[in-house]
Each structure stands twice: as C-alpha cells, then as structure tokens.
Amino acid sequence: MNRKSIASLVLAILAALAFSICNGCFTPPAPPTSKAGTGIGAGGHVVSARAQMAESNRMEKAKATRAAADAAITAQYRCTTNGGAITINRYIGSTRDAAIPGKINGLPVTAIGEGAFSSCASLTNVTIPASIVSIDEYAFSSCTGLTNVTIPASTRSLGSGVFWGCTGLIDVAVPTGIATIPQYAYWGCTRLRWVTIPDNVTKIGVGAFWGCTNLPSVTIPRSVTSIGTDAFPRRTKVIRSTAVPR
Image 1 (cartoon, rainbow, N blue to C red):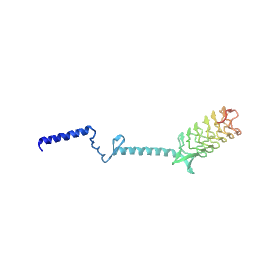
Image 2 (cartoon, rainbow, N blue to C red):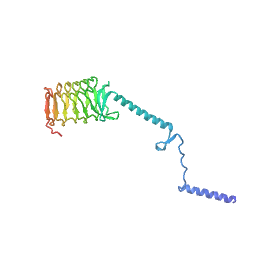
Image 3 (cartoon, helix red, strand yellow):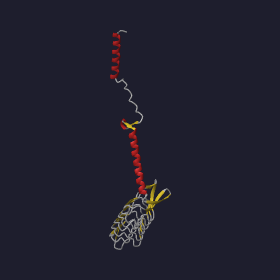
Image 4 (cartoon, rainbow, N blue to C red):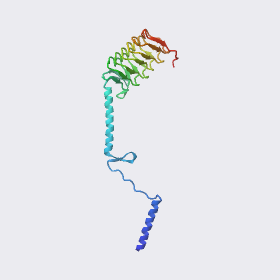
C-alpha cells in the first residue's frame, strides 16, 4: 500500500470516529473505582475511611451521653418491678425539679408508691409522665416547697392524703382520668386558691380539701353524687355547677 492509500485510510477512520461521537454512539470510559479505604457518600462524593470513623465515633459518643443522662435520672429513684412495670418507691435525688422518667431499664413506669416523695421539702416542681396510672397514699405529703405538679390524664387513681400538707400548692387541677378525689387528698394545703374539678368526678372524700383556708370557692360538677364530711373548709363557698356532664 502506497503512502497515498495509507493517508486516505487514516482520514476515513478519523471521519468515522467523528461521526460516531457526534451521533452519541461514543461510549465514555468507566469512572475509576474507589480505592481501598474510601466509600461513596451522598451525591456520589468520596468519603474517606477517616471521615467514616469520625462519624461513627460521634454517634457512639452521643449514644453514651444519652445513656449517662438516663442513668443520672434513674439513679434518683428506688424502684421495684412487678409484672413488667416499674413502681417508684422513693425519691432520693436532691434537685428542686424532679422529672419522673417514663421508662427505667426499658420497662414502663406506671405507679408512684406510698410516700415516695413524702417530706421532700426542697422539691418545687414534679413532672409526671403519661405512663403513670396510679399515685398511692401520701405520695407527696408534706412537700412544703412543692408549687407545681401536673398529673396526666392517664392517671386513674389517687391514694388518700396524696398531697396532704403541701402548703406551697396554689393551683390544683384534678386529672380528668380520676373518678374519686380520695379522703384528705389536699388536706392542709393552706395556700391553695384555685381548684378545678372535672366533670367525670363522682365522689369527693372526707376532708379532701379541709384546712385549705385560702380557698375562697369551688365549683362542683353535676357528676359528683357524694361529698364526704368536712370535704371543704366551712368558709369556702361551694358552688354547684348547672352544666350537664359530658
């Protein structure tokens, strides 16, 4: 083959290649595979082994921090387990604000036992989780510094004298899950000025609010069919609601 023929052949090959590229037939080379010690992150970005390790360490540290915080909270309580549920038997913490956990060791906290917070005079605020079903007798009695406690609607029973002598309480909202306000429940809460009784309550026990000398008045819903002796101070105006219970 002479030089002229070779030149013509080269030109023909180049022309064919150019035609293929222009018509989208050209196949680009495959991207390089990642080298050992790297991975592909979001958006196709290469993530180094060092970055992956740093992220793993960050997650482990966050997990350990949460576990330590949970342990610090649960260490404030003495508990018993019964039927797969936890009862708080005694608060041994020293903080002014107590947040009762909804779970301890993976089990639900469903009850606050008798006298569990009794005489914790420095306690000012208690947060009760929605997991709590019952609060037993004298659970918060003589917590003279207690000013704020909200009982969730999930709570179905209160024990006698549950807030007996809590002289710091000013405002009380009886939980909507309660049918009976037990005897001496708020006996001697001398600063109490407002009480809200829901229309599902049917009974108010003996001396439930006796000694609440600053309670000017209270409205009793029509659902209440029984009021015990000395349930309210003699100077407290007891108003019977005319609203029909829901």
